[in-house]
Length: 132
Image 1 (cartoon, rainbow, N blue to C red):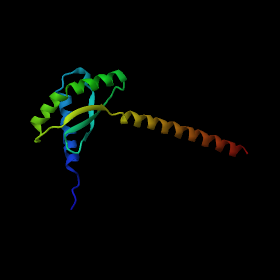
Image 2 (cartoon, one colour):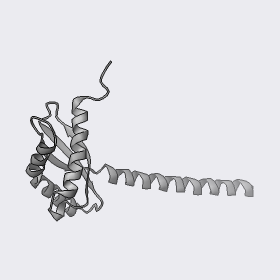
Image 3 (cartoon, rainbow, N blue to C red):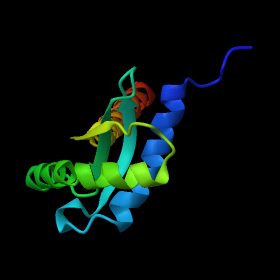
Image 4 (cartoon, rainbow, N blue to C red):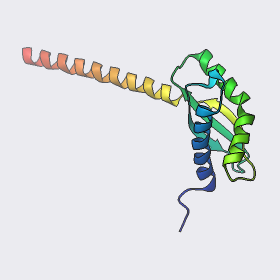
């Protein structure tokens, strides 16, 4: 019977949960506030982790500052992960901004605009047919 999840997937999910809590409660840098850890991607050998995060504020300067703050806190976070996880080696952490939420919101807005335009066009077509 094949495994449902690979080891790297399970470790990545555990890292995401732990990092979410650590960033929320342990990181004191105000630039790292209002940050949510969205995903963790691990290398095959579990030595490196790309940690994706999102912010409520989509200001480019705030995103850049948050990225810098989190990458500066990576050593602290790695040490804290080592205390809480039972792993021989905690992966090296690299924080990256996840813009998928912003892209999704933009796509939703485009779809809503297209639907509204379609409704207006169908109402105009119906009015023209009824006047004929």
